[in-house]
Image 1 (cartoon, chains in turn cyan, green):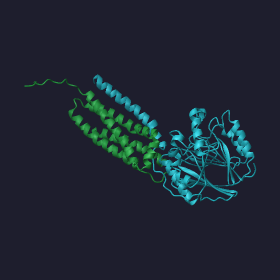
Image 2 (cartoon, one colour):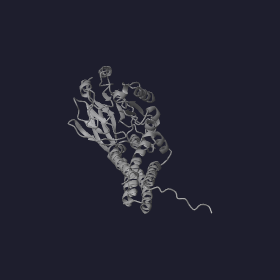
Image 3 (cartoon, chains in turn green, yellow):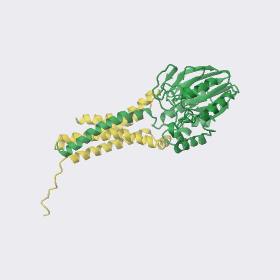
Length: 319
Length: 147
């Protein structure tokens, strides 16, 4: 074997080894996990303002981690529009991570306007629990700029806020670190404590991105069970909605509070079972919730329209 | 041997589509679009034809058969890498452009097959370069000159 042959064969063998490792270890799993393939926007005509508007009724949807703009996000959005036809709702509670692969201001049409167009045109409102600014990104210029874009484009009043819809008081939190669990968390926790204490509505629903309880890829959020959960229990919160893990999981009531992860808005990851798990499933999904007086019925709808879970709650007493 | 390399190339072109489809399957999507699989199969078929013909030609003219297989190995590496990584980069860096195209009816099949077609061309160029580089280069011989 001469020098050229040796060199070319060496390049080939080293290249083959490195390529096999890179593809099997990183590239192919990424292609499988992410929602990168473009698709057709939902073409569904909806009757505007078709949802019930009585004081003791509310229908809404909880959707988490839907920000790819890809084929799977579009499929979930289409299923949401189809569900609206038979069970109309006037509100979508976005549970964070509404924009992957770039800045929300630039991607607004792709990740929000295009998939959710039929619902937007039908007059459905959107509320947001900030999610896509995990860890240190929260206080970076890039993170703050993205947060500002989200708040502005969705008309969200602040990083954390409360809103009343029919018989439900919603509390949307900013659970990005250090927003809720870090050393500077006391401001938001104090606000939540006061807001829950003064809540006069029949139902209290808290929405945040990072789940206090989860058996998914990220798992339960460190610090949540020590700092947030006691506060939620003390104020008799009925339901806590979160995303972050790309799956569906309902937790057995913890001191009376029901926790749900609804993060299958566009991609999925494995989910196991923990001692606190009632139902868990790896699936593209959203949660449809119907409140009538003191009865709440929630249905986890898979992207193919089948039902992954259904549960009912009675409103808890007390503040 | 030639058939083996051509088929190995077909497989590495097909794997990204299988990875995407497995993600869709795991996500519980009821009806799966198979356009990316079809696009990869089309690009793979083009590769099989090109590689097969090239390998047979090279086997015929090579001074050492080893040169053919070294060139084929390097081409396979470039093919495997570019068929997946090019695709990932193109999808990841230009998601809004693709969404806009898809909205206007541009088929994903063409996008996918086009990117993998580029990977096939890169692999062909790599094979030809290595084969040329490994083969002995005879100095040009002087002809008898003008009469």
